[in-house]
Length: 306
Ligand SMILES: Cc1cc2nc3c(=O)[nH]c(=O)nc-3n(C[C@H](O)[C@H](O)[C@H](O)COP(=O)(O)O)c2cc1C
Image (cartoon, rainbow, N blue to C red; front, top):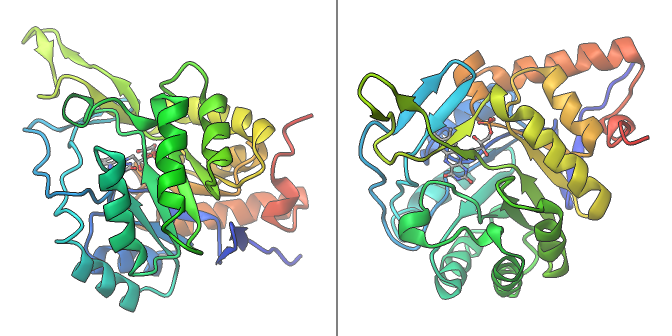
């Protein structure tokens, strides 16, 4: 049986639906190329901001039994320090590069987006939802309908034909309202979800384990939260969704696709299953599809909604 794993994401063709999620493999061309060589359909850049950021103090990562808890705090060289690196990535990669970015104000979002768009990545993703920078970057944009609308519409005006995705958080009363607001403002797609805010406490030291106290949880613990977010968004918006959160296996990816995702982001899965997680996940998807007589991703998209 012939199986077609390719997907069309807001006009961008991916040979398979697996995408390296933002922040996992940094911002070197070599590490993103390594993901391509290990089967990724597309790769996302670590989020780049308006200025260089050092990030939070250690400990910034805690590997908990059910997930990974991080408060790295968006360390990055800033857009000016990233332009050469991004150009190199675009030269070496044969798969689409998704440029992820964030900022503190709308003016700074626009400034970063202009510089990033000039490099012409396949997609630009607005990280509106990092949970552990709230103290110094203000509220998460994706926690508010109007803030989401304002930032998406401002950036959309200047990215030209580059599809614009808004990355959302499940840490809100109603993710559907935020997703609809991004769509109405011109977003071409959504990414759901970012990490989920949490605290782990060391009961012997009597204090939170992460130096920042609050961190973002990723990995298997958040998968049902991500699937629920995609499920609800799929019923409310027409634009494609990159389902992200706790995907380690082909079966996990199919769960997201049946909830309505057009493609899947894999972050912590690189840690759980190794860099070839992309190849493993696509091989496992193929086995499932063969056994269950699905020919394409489109055949499975959203079919759990009955
Ligand atoms: C160490 C680490 C750093 C991350 N950095 C970013 C980032 O810079 N920008 C972003 O949008 N998401 C970032 N994320 C969130 C991931 O892209 C992803 O949305 C989240 O981890 C859930 O997916 P997963 O369970 O497959 O890891 C980061 C996650 C981790 C674990």
